Image 1: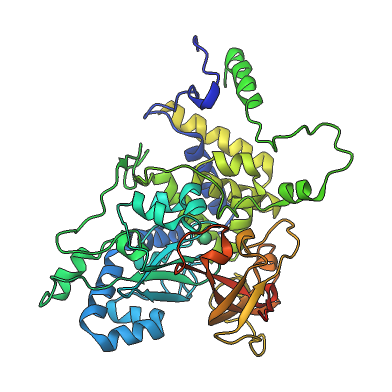
Image 2: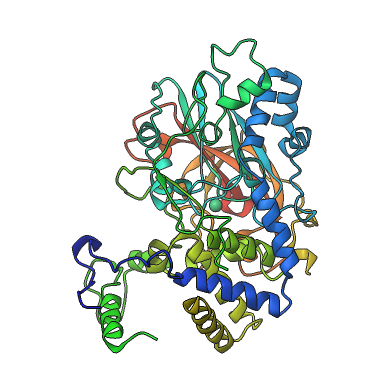
Length: 240
Length: 141
Length: 108
Ligand SMILES: [Fe+2]
């Protein structure tokens, strides 16, 4: 190394990140821990493969289906609000997967929070990043940042505005800090202009952000648009 | 292995890593209670702390991140630890500097490694040798 | 595997819940040492029980792998104005979970 990489004021001159063909420190540690755990019989490669298969099967589409069905079927909505884990089975989501007793981290206490024209829910976990994975998939990275967790509970309207969601003061904003073993999902208000839509059509406008509560569904809005930070070696790429 | 010059430079970078309570803190024979409470505050409890507006970007998941998540969950599935212990180790025990500075799943895998060593499932010497071996394995490719 | 660490076996009952929906409660400020899931920002604040949820281990024990003490959990609702000085919107609320031992009756 010929030139200095000493961090300067504001950390503007951190050492360069590794190049793409270099293996990173965390990749090395991850491989070492996984291989040793398997060598010591703490779990099997098959356990890891099975859990990975489940993790790759989950995503927000299940939540979208649940919301769309709740919008068109009031009896289903009542079942969702009464016992969401049980109601999830009706849309093909079993919270007991993939182990028979659920995942170690998601527990089985899902609660669906129903918005009204005068009440808007938004979800955060200020302590880590608790999130209803079986129904919405893996949490977005921004949901895990200290920034979102610090600010949402105290300045919810400012944070929502940064997501492009501005709500009038007469709408009560209810922040749900998911700090223990309940998991939460927002059931937004069905927007105007969707009369006579099929469940499939409705599900398309219920994006992940709508179910976290940082966006509202509306006709024509079928994706959450954020700047994208690309992975160096995304899921599915192999080193070997 | 890193060269001598690189090691000296690494040493310099380490010296910049000083999260601190910004008050004089040498020779602390006694501390006022609010200061003790600040030190003992669990780092993960950040709700209401000041921060600046941010761009909430999406991040594509790295393969090692998914592997880390699965390894930690499978360790729970097989009864080696539970998720509350994982949160304690990854979000608190690492301390402020690592909590704020290390990527999300980087903290998870560090927590898992430390737990396996603490519970004597793996000897630290064995883990260190394995890390060196994995590094060498992929350096050759 | 140790089944006690799995989520499969429901923990032994903790007895009758001390609070019911609508009760006013204050969050205690117990000392912080090594681990807690009771946020600083709710401590000392008064809120209303919004739901009695489940019974489970308490996080301070579970984080160190101790089984045994099972408690009733609640969802508590606060007015944002009661949590943050100068909070400008009267209607806004916040909910969070708490195990029973962190709550005491508030008669205000
Ligand atoms: Fe969390």
